[in-house]
Image (tube, rainbow, N blue to C red):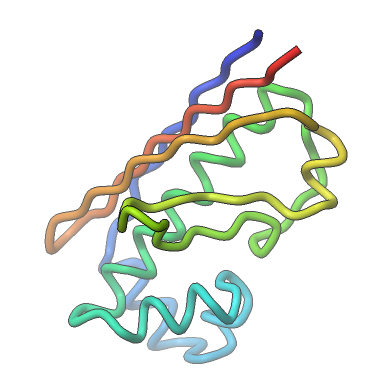
Length: 124
């Protein structure tokens, strides 16, 4: 078994600036349709977007430690799981590079920042 950890923190004002500048194009670039729908259902849309971005970055960092490369924003999807806890899944393109892996994530935010941690365990 091999493990990797990634973490990331995102400034929500920075996300607000990207959204103000590029609008829906920014959202379409970084979120899947299901992630967008989830974020739109929340009281603070941009906090949710920032949480998703921080989580994707944390997952990328952990994947990179396992040798996974060449993936894009939408190759990681962060949604609410059955127990309402967030769950990250990776695309078939990424999972081909890292089969038999379990991903655990944690997301938190304040009014100003979102932070995420990803833990990836590769089963032999």
